[in-house]
View (cartoon, rainbow, N blue to C red):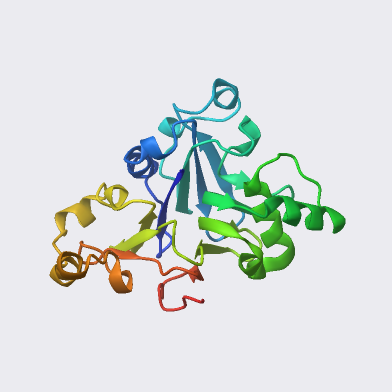
Length: 257
């Protein structure tokens, strides 16, 4: 189990690193082994990566702490990750994970079962690897195959991937929807996370929270949760299973399955 969090200001305003950390701390138990953050300028390739108090000492010696980060003009996207180490226990698996050429980065919750086979195929295409993680295979797979990579993965995942060349943020979930991505919009900002409690750290979201009575009815009568991607909270939804989408001002109008 890991956890991911994201904030996107759809008008290009600076996101608040303190809020990003607060949202991430809300799901700290999903990843006790490490935490990582990146702030991204959606109009350029400019970015800043950070670690956190839960990061291994070796990482804290090489990366600034998120606690020192300031809201900076242009950094309109913030991504974070709490890591539960399973594959490649070393710090080489730290996330956000950046491709070797720096063209993209990812925060990822899940496991790619066929990552060894995919790694071998990518190596035959000339890709070299720095780690033994399935995260790196996932990211290099996107770099080589684009969004077609999602059809090649065998496993379960919740992914937020930023492509610096195409200046786009992609969200994706596995076919069965085992790994969730909950999201909401407030004040022209998109917030998403592995758990709803992270979203409730946003003042505007918490202040406006109310029960989705239709969703509660289906739970009480049929035992169904997240039916039609609706949650028990009005205006908080779940990204559909077996999909990927680019985050833009029209989100979620362009979800692809």
